[in-house]
Image (tube, rainbow, N blue to C red; front, side, top):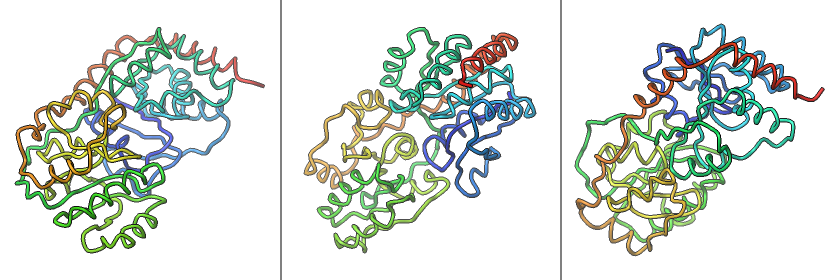
Length: 353
């Protein structure tokens, strides 16, 4: 199976690691992205940036790349790439799978004519929509009632590593930007009341200097360290007792037997426990729709020895790559290249000018 992935950004994060896990069985894999992190990703993809030119011309250029790569299927991710990439896949006569990562993935294109193109393609090409949680599936079903929707929950590769939990070190992998800042602030306030704990922050972003300034202001410099971006956050988790964060970064720690602390972009939600697993999974471990645990209870949890309620390694999905591959092969087998090319041409016809 040869795959071309098209995405707006490839800057290091949950989207990128999901792509790598899902497509590890692909014989060849090319990523096309408008904005990329320097030198990433090392494996398994090649980055090819393209300029933000008109949608029709960009789609035609991308279609040529898809054909040149001899792709069997096109793997699409939000946001603008969903419209451009789906049009390009149709023009190339290739089936496409669109992954919706969260509620914001469903926001419609800004321009009316872009919405018209997307709705035309969704209606005529009928690509497979992949959703990562029950929350996103419900929203997608409401927006695209006739769409073919498949739930492939976020998951990670099996770890096989489980080092002792010493209860004294927290690892948090997150972007350091304004969208995550409020959650980080709450973790720092927790650290002031937990003098026996150290915190290692892995990540980078536009708010890094603000985070470092707040660490100094709170007098936490001796116990909180910002390490910057790391290509593989999972590699540092075994040396920490607790992993804090949300989404895939959290799962990477949980599969290694670490205890988990859910921290969204806006708040500290609380510990991951077996009896709350399904509720957290509904919103992809984002903390949406989950009541926050009182800080005193979180502190007591950090002090306590791990219990059976904390061990959730057996609940972490590890079959995501196999499920994605089965869906992709089914899409490839059922594709009608000529029908897809006709759908692409019809969509081009509704473009202005």
